[in-house]
Amino acid sequence: MQTKSHVAVIGAGAFGGWTALYLLRRGAQVTLLDAWGPGNPRASSGGETRVIRGTYGPNQPYSRMAARALQLWKEHETRWRRQLMHRNGVLWMAAAGDDQFERGSLPLLREAGIAYEELSADDIAKRWPQINPEGVRWGIYEPDGGFLEARASCQGVLEGFLAESGEYKQTAVLAHDLELGLDDGLTLADGSRLVADSYVFACGPWMGKLFPDTIGNKIRATKQEVFFFGTPAGDDRFLEDKLPVWADHRDRFMYGIPGSLVPGNHGRGFKIADDTRGPEFDPDTAERVASAEGLKTARDYLGFRLPAMKDAPLLQTSVCQYEDTPDHHFIMDRHPAFRLERFGALENPVTG
Ligand SMILES: Cc1cc2nc3c(=O)[nH]c(=O)nc-3n(C[C@H](O)[C@H](O)[C@H](O)COP(=O)(O)OP(=O)(O)OC[C@H]3O[C@@H](n4cnc5c(N)ncnc54)[C@H](O)[C@@H]3O)c2cc1C
Image (cartoon, rainbow, N blue to C red; front, top):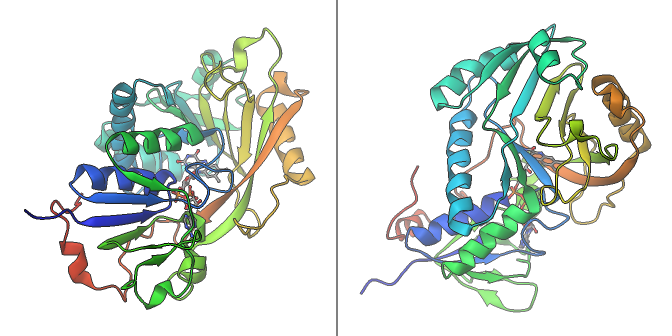
């Protein structure tokens, strides 16, 4: 009888968690490792919520990937009998000047089969009178988009993985000499070793530290600040059933997620974030304190775009990091020093 190929997946964030689950389903024995747990406060996948949408500009594969992700979240919510996604729609507001991003997204949304409506600034103002449409020329509304409960989803994927007989260990892989090869397996922070047939590193912003020669600063982590404001008591205009997630392309790219009814983002409030890349950030050691300038930008924006929220109190802040590559696309590759024949060992190799 052929024995199963053993794969170690390092990193249980959005990418590692799903990779581990799908390797398991394709017939591998899988050990998933994470230093601090899925969606932990240092991870890029941590925090309350993430936008899920198909609009990604022209010439990209992401609209199709998002269509598949939307389908998979739906299937897994049914399978796991829990809600992780909130389908309150996503509104893109295109500025009066350059709207290439939004315009170029439309054919790819169509190709991917993602439902959308093109709205004029008047349509937006009529449908959501709580939004000030100043400076908006037109918009894209994706009714099937919305937001995911980020940390809860990563934990949900781990629970699904364990239920299908995956093995999980909460410990770190030490970064000693990984570039030289893994014939003796991984050295773990708890003093043990782990030897597998193949290894998948899905360590997001930590990849450059683990592989300083091959990745190094090709993945840069930047500080990103998130602000949660309190909605007025008894006023539901800023909650998820009355307002979609929105993305606003102006001089800065700002986006937000409305407040939600428990159990959405657990009453955390109304999220506003600035997509502009912040300063370099060390995901291990940096302190996660939002800046006064970041708060001013968020507050000024909130007062402008949603005037009735102008004096809303700040309830919480959080600091996360983007992990970005030089061309902003994913890096998905084999380590140049790794022996290729090992990748042939899976009974059902993962393709497509
Ligand atoms: C503020 C913010 C807002 C965002 N908004 C959106 C959004 O709205 N929509 C969207 O699609 N995307 C959004 N993103 C991007 C998205 O969240 C990330 O692309 C995604 O979460 C990255 O996941 P990951 O698995 O690569 O990394 P991570 O989640 O960081 O996972 C890496 C894991 O590796 C573990 N690890 C690291 N080193 C080791 C080691 N040596 N040993 C063991 N484990 C290790 C870590 O503990 C971590 O859990 C946002 C990101 C941020 C920060």
